[in-house]
Image (cartoon, rainbow, N blue to C red; front, side, top):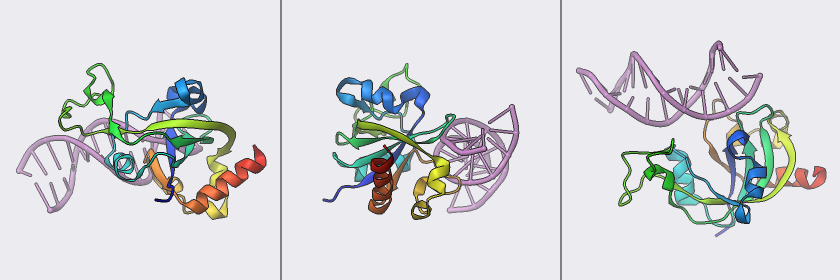
Amino acid sequence: MAKNYWLMKSEPDECSIDDVLAAPRQTVPWTGVRNYQARNFMRDAMKPGDGVLFYHSSCAEPGIAGIATVASRPYPDATQFDRDSEYYDPASTPENPRWVNVDVRAVRRTQLITLAQLRATPQLTEMAVLRRGNRLSITPVTAGQWRCITTRLVRDG
DNA sequence: GCCAACGTTGGC
DNA sequence: GCCAACGTTGGC
């Protein structure tokens, strides 16, 4: 099957692209997703090797800060069973887990492409993350959008 | 801190 | 199944 492409939001205060690059094997488990639509993307559509635009949100300069890749199949999110975790879900059981995550491996940090720059790019006006009121932490990216953005990154660093 | 937008919850 | 209330996200 062909590669899919995704945009994944992370608050840099929690986990920045540099944090992922500094992690063992430059890989982190993408835990804590508690939205069904975002979960379903991981569970049903993501494959190892898919391309990821690493987006920094809820920060001074929101935008795409790096390139990453999906590094595992989906598996149960361990934080849902951890009573001490802010992501603990008492309604979920190991026999019937509600939440899953994939692993994400950072490929490289890039020059920041700001939200304003994304909005100003005519080829990107249809990007899901730019839609009004969008709150999804994981959104699909088309091959054309991926090409537009990564080409720009190759050109500008 | 504000607030628009949207998801979830729970009473009915 | 409806829908109001509430909570969360996330840019500004």
